[in-house]
Length: 258
Image (tube, rainbow, N blue to C red; front, side):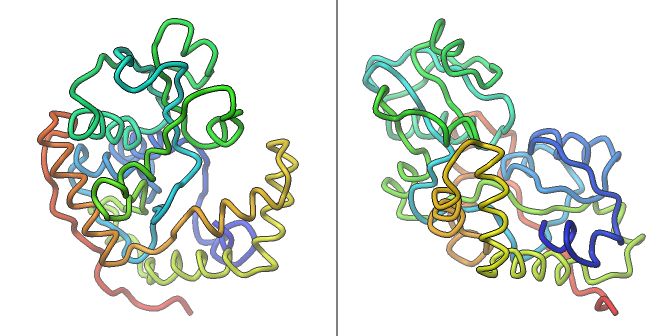
């Protein structure tokens, strides 16, 4: 979001912020044109086109998507799922059913670890709550790390999408705008500013934020990521967690921003 908050791109769009699952819901309702959506949402919402090249993915442990428990995997029967992203919830189901011994009972829950574990054997946390977990107190599984260990493929958590019905309203090269914003946000000086800002907000050391943003997150929707995404869709469908195996449709070239 760097250019949208610090550059000229912010003047071109009306911007709002919410959790990824709500971004997808806004696109589905038609109350937003473009959003960064959980990758699983693409299989449930018709008429979406992917902005190419940009993703929130991981090619190693991601740290911010954790299954947390006081029990071993084979003792886990009930799982409280953080309700803010359907992709991570779907990934948890895929891992259990494909690699961890079969189906479990799942319930959607607000991301409060102690409340989740009060009535469930395990809790799935994403984002900031996961980063702040004291992993020395629990057994934890990094879902990206587990996916990569089993499949040898990256995992794509989210990407930018636009409603097909809205494309005709834009004469800008949207792919270029979003790719440049990513590139500018990854410049060292800008990453340092992001790390200081979010370290203060989250009560974490800025160096820990910087390490997370540079080592754990991969921002390019490359061929390896697309291969991992296709496998995730197939497994999600086979497990009954997704209604279909969608074919990705990408935004074609548009006039450049001048």
